[in-house]
Amino acid sequence: MSMRPDPGKNLNRALDLIAEAGAAGAGMVCLPELFSWRYFCQSEDAANFELAEPVPGPTTRALEALAADLDLVVIGGVFECAAPGIYYNNAVFIDGRRGYRGKYRKMHIPDDPVYGYREKFYFTPGDLGFRPFSSRWGKCGVMLCWDQWYPEAARLSALQGAQILIYPTAIGWHPDDSPEERSRQSEAWELMQRSHGIANGCFVIAVNRVGFEPAPRKSATAGGGSPGIEFWGRSFVSGPDGQVLGRASAESDEVLGVELD
Image 1: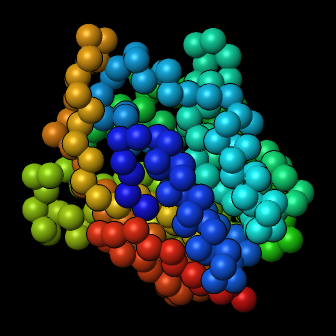
Image 2 (image 1 turned 30 degrees about the vertical axis):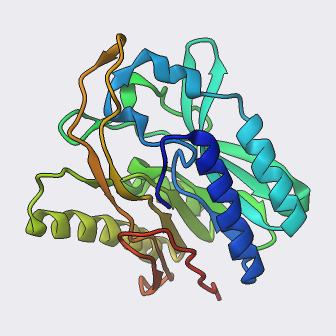
């Protein structure tokens, strides 16, 4: 999924894609990390805290209504304001007509100004641990982006019964990266997650955004900035043996349907 500057349009686009997946017979749909927004963490701008919302809140309710109508499991990333001055990078878990089942707060928070990941300015490390969500499709261990590089996160989820490891993600290349460097990074990203599936006997679902996003325009409160990020997409699903069961586009929006058996 590619993101536009308008959060409302991103949410509506996400709802359209969920409906498209439901019409194709999907029972579970996962959206990327922070899917309602362009990746604002490229700069340190206090004005961006106005984007945050409670969880559950408006975005959760919109997902919940459609999930209930289609009776789908839906996972999506939300910028959460938990209390004044306390913000989390969050993923909500909604189980169809059972409604909102809970949230996961990202534990591993990156700080890489060269590549434009200034998340420590915005997010407090999660305090809910790695706890799988039960659903009709099995127990789902939900993590977020940089969590995917740490085997401990997947292992702790699997030890609590997770059968599916789910990673909503926002990751991409620096515009100056060479073709060789781009290949190295994206291959390592996929390989790392597939290895978690092999080590723990789990399916893996990784969902990334696509497209180039320029660094946000600097405001009076902004600090730093990057030249932009080219998100590499390549969302994929792999089996417990590490085999890739499906892979989405690197360049355009796509609903990737994969049967887990």
